[in-house]
Amino acid sequence: MMVLGSSFVGCNITSDNDYKKAALETLEERYGEEFDIKQLGGTFGALNDTKKLVCYPVSSPDKFFYVEVEKDLSEVHDNYINRIMEEKLNEMLTPIAKELFGEEVKVQSYFAHKYNEYDSLDMNVVDFMNRNDNCTYVLSIFVRGGENIDKSIEAEKISIFGQKLLENNILSTNSVSIWYTKDDEYNNVESKYYDIIFERSVAKYYLNADKIYNTAWFEIVDKKMINTKEDIINSFKY
Image (cartoon, rainbow, N blue to C red; front, side, top):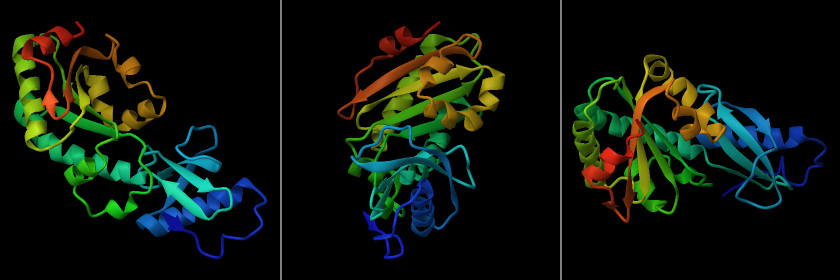
């Protein structure tokens, strides 16, 4: 955990601006880029008796993350490393997804709260996930189209994708969703994804016949796929 300098500790805290300043200056020092505040308060946190904020990098305003500042300004805790690692995982898995589902596919991931892992910046994403294997990782594969898919063929692709996750030592325990999206939704996956996550409504948002043609899923538990090809076929929504 990063301990703040004497310019913060011991000063008279008179307003929320003190917490904002402590958060933003610490984040910039920690990650070497500029940040701003999305929300002050109104969130649940992992720690007790802290001031809670939602921040975002100015370079990517959609990529919110959580920050907690100790009431005496002595420490700032954040989980921005999750956004960094999500991007690494998306880049790693996109070529694998394209081999199976074609060129028009997008990978989006979301890592649940994990504070104070900023010492992991230079770590590769697989090592990071293995180090934090008690965290929750959400993985969504968005495929353009799919109005008349052959569920058996698609289930085989999905099963192979799951095996490739295991071969690459990714996702020791989690579920993966595949969304066969209509054009408008596919084109806006990146711009909408984190806003949807922030509202905690990914499944609710995409489980809509106006947005998708179909969806399926599988689950990995203890580094094993627990769903057969037949299970995946039966998981299709439509």
